[in-house]
Length: 257
Image 1 (cartoon, rainbow, N blue to C red):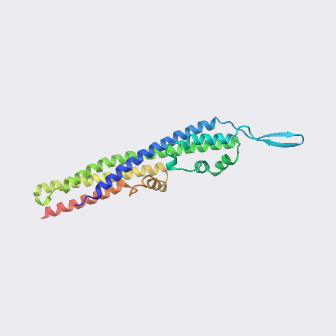
Image 2: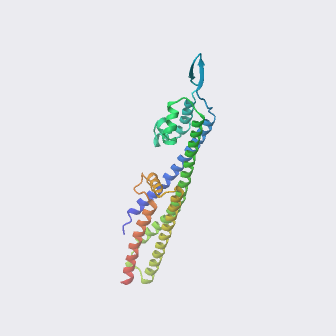
Image 3: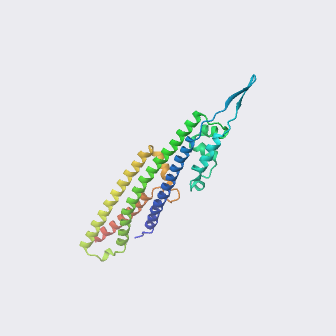
């Protein structure tokens, strides 16, 4: 019996666990960065242009303090200074704030020196949305971490058992021992079914937490883009289950003979 694909799949799950740990750390760092950015923005005073007049003429006096420059500095020192920023994003200030806060706020922050009450309120609101969305993502990642670790431990035990079974010469074993092995393998297949059911339940929880099926699909594609499979646990279940069924058939033939 060939088991060549199974160690590779176990490696894929181990890599997935490492990916999730890294992703969780990065999201946590981003949450802290946005929280710090929000504090700094709250401390920046509203500073709009004021009306002045000389005789019959009036004009707008430019603020002495450029509030949007202070916001840019704060953003660069917090959000754009997370340890993974260049590797994961690597975009400019203008592109980043447009992606995070929307094009209207980005235009206002880059093309004006004034921080109006409306602009500040809208910016604070978008910062809070950025924080909340990352907290939701972190919760989802933690659900996936718990699920994949639990599945991996059980599947790893089954893979080790399968490897031990593969070294047995069933043609040299008496009938009663063959029956015992057949029962053990049937029990292992039952465990497979339970692992698959629980894994699907966990995926449904994640789907519910992310609200849409499409978002969940995109999440797995994003998380495991460096792996050869988007669903490493399900692939290992399929590979091990197939090998176990082959083994069961092999034992059945010996019992009949």
